[in-house]
Length: 323
Image 1 (cartoon, rainbow, N blue to C red):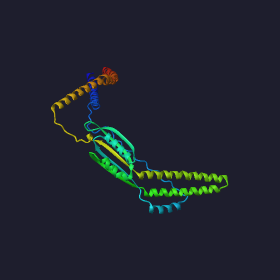
Image 2: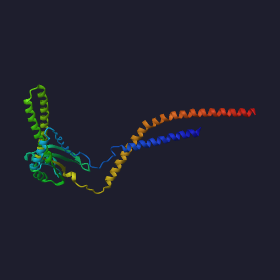
Image 3: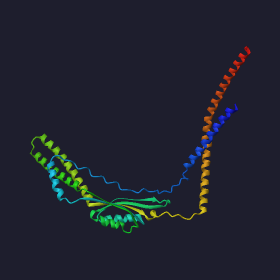
Image 4: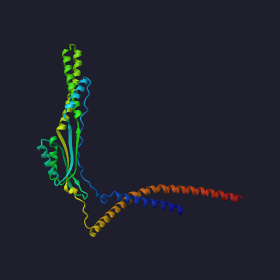
């Protein structure tokens, strides 16, 4: 009797210890006061979304021979068309004031501001510092001058990238397609004027509408490339001077270490008390609820076992008496 009961109590005690230790570890790992982050955090630098590419030029089959001839003649005389953009990051004393100066610079050069963003970031010490991004467009011929003036009075230039995309062939192809479409439109209008049957006029009119839609699409693509070549995009990231300061290691002070140790001890006691409260109010009742049916099963099994053993003992005794 005592041995099985002792085993059950020992199993319950092991479950209690494991549950208590698990709760304590979980509570310590999830405590926000003990979690420390010394990494760089804060605002996320805003970046300019990549410009959507112009839709692919429409293909026309009405006058392919005229298009090919136009392409051959235009490539030889067309000057090179290049889309130039720049991207740089500079360190300044006041990002907000510098962003206002770059805005004024864009307006002065006949350009405009595409987007601007001023936000707060954090150093590795948790110090809050301002940071900004701005994207402007200026006339392509003034790109060098704009970059020079943007970098004036900058404490440092972290990086500077300049890209170029030659779109001469694409532009010439669009112009050739536009001329072919316009010639097809004129021919269709001429045929429609000479048509006499209503169904012929309607069919030709529908073709004219389709060709005119394609002409407007081609004009929109050509205008897109004209503006992209005429102006250059400059994306500038403005970093505050405080955000680039090197890490300084101060002298070691025992009083500071002792203060931190006492604070950690207080936090540990708080966590321990919270875990103990959860154990008493949640874990212990749950384990008791689990142990009660197990103990009842044990008692039932023991009673059955004793009854079977008693019946066997009585059978053995009766056999001995008969003998």
